[in-house]
Image (cartoon, rainbow, N blue to C red):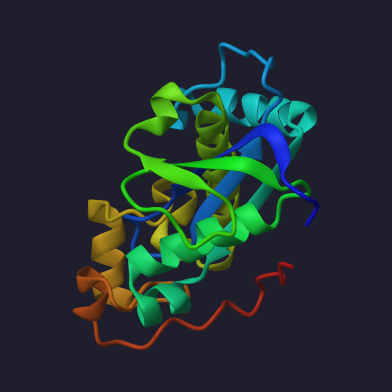
Amino acid sequence: MNKLNHGLIAGVDEAGRGPLAGPVVAAAVVLAPDYRNAEIRDSKKLSKARREQVSRLIRENAIAWSIGAATGLEIDDQNIHRATLAAMRRAVLGLQCAPAFVIVDGRFYPELPYPGSALVRADETESAVSAASILAKVFRDRYMGFLGQKYPEYGFCQNKGYPTAMHLRVLQSCGPCPDHRRSFRPVARTNQACPAPRPNEPEQH
């Protein structure tokens, strides 16, 4: 990493703490101090199509951006809190420039070699954090789309791994797939082995 860049702030946010399957994903974004875009706000306030468009703008205009993730296995091994902090740390350390300060959405600050702070609802007040929330959400939704093609039974393309009624019914009848978080109670309650991939399913990489 380069020496600290005076005045550059990295915003960090995550997506995917609550789902029963898939990784928890974090993004880190560094915006120019004078960069303004009214469309950059909390990802939950944007439609899916608009998130995709704004995500593209962020990647094109940010000074630096990076994605970090922790897998379902890491979540099961460490717990979701520690896995989230690990994903955040990976995102920040993946930046191509070293920020002078890091703002993380939430109450907890990951172990980082940079000064910073955790701020509740920072995704509503800090542009860089809002941008990070958009990138994290878009990346994770795309990944869950990939898992939805691999394991169509669970409806991941629609529910993104969240415990919808349909998801819970299939989980109860089919058991978990390899990407389910077995430490989460609704998954832990199931005892059946994961379904084998269908023979005619193409491999995804």
